[in-house]
Image 1 (cartoon, rainbow, N blue to C red):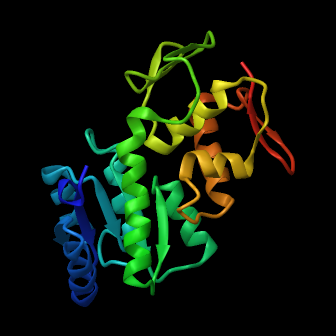
Image 2: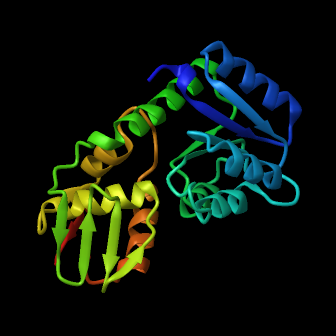
Length: 231
C-alpha cells in the first residue's frame, strides 16, 4: 500500500502540534484527520476507521489514556494501531499507555523524519499482519484454550476472548512452540520490530494483560531470560 492509502487520526488539544504534525504527514501523502480532544477523537475514530491514531496523553476532559481504553473497547476499532505522541516520558505514563492498549509510545520533542519513520514502521506491521512471521498452525487447540489464526479468534472454555492485536500476536508467538523459552529480545523483535524503540516493560504489561484474560497457568516466566507457553 502507498502512504495515500492510509488514514491517520491526530488527537491533541494544542493547535500548533496538530498543524505541525499534520503538515509533515501530508507531505508524505498520508490522509490526515484531526481532533482537539479525546471525546472528539473517539467520535471521529468510530466514523472514519483510521489505520493509525496518534494520541496526546494530557488533554482536558477525556485524557489520552482513557481515550485509548475506550477505542480498544469499541467494536471495529479493537485492532486499530494507536501510538501516544506526548511530552510525558515517565515510566509510569508509558506503562499506563501500553496497559490501555497502545502499540507505541513516542516522546516529544521528536524530529519530523524520526516521527515519520516510526509511523511507517507501525504501518508496515499493519500491512504485514496478514502474513505474520510468527510460525504457527492456523488452528491451535490446547484443550481449554483454542486459537484460530485465520479468524483472529481466541476461545477459553468455549468463551470468546477479545484480544488487541499485540496481545494476540504475543500469544500466538508463544504458542507456536510450546515449551520453548522465548528471549525478551526475540519477543520485542518479532512482535514490535527492531525499527520501533520500546522498553522491556512493554512485554511485561502485555504478558500481565494476557494472564488476566487466559489465566496464570499457560504463560511461565523464566527469570532473567523471557517467557514460555505450557499447555
